[in-house]
Image 1 (cartoon, one colour):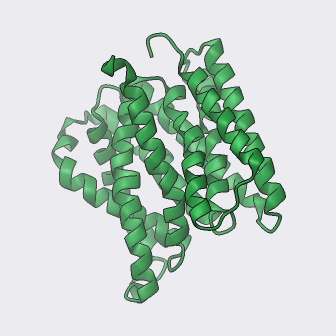
Image 2 (cartoon, helix red, strand yellow):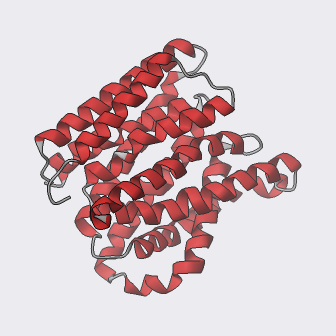
Length: 291
């Protein structure tokens, strides 16, 4: 029974961690630029993962390093900056909602580019979850006309990157441990993120109080919200299906909304309804034999 339900435990833990990431990004932007925030997030995660998993790098076969590089950039590097830039114009809760497009993109890319099979109930679950997300998005747009929704396209691009990442891991890296994949990813990204960070003039402003306070939020985001979460997520991909693993993005907005409420972001009755519909979609998409 425990083995059957373990994927649900991983899903819930990840939704709590990643649902909290958006408010951490919002707080981190008070003192940091989007490029600085994205870079620090990666650097903190890289240091943490190298400290606990550096020995696992020797377990990566030479012919799999190209997939480690691809998943590093699609799964972390590009989205880290896109989300930070998007939250300069969008509420943290709205950004989390848009991220829920990931399962739909994962399903489409999986079928078209990776030859993965799906069942009718998976498609139905994704569509129901997407309908719930649409309710949340429309309600958010109506209640926040001052926000620039062109920045929403950055989140959509990030969700496409996540979709490619999940399918790559499922198809090419399933034989590696989650810690090995995570450590390999962030080893690849450490130098590029350092280059981006110090090209922003960070060395000149790092000692200011606002930057130091922001860095505390990003330290939590990097270690827990990125390092630990990536390990859990890669494990979830391996023990379930890509569509189920990415359905965590349907639960993330619910957690993000409650954080948003504490930070004085508004939640409407329609958004509550959308969250409930999302839960139904997640449950239905998970009902796949041998997943």
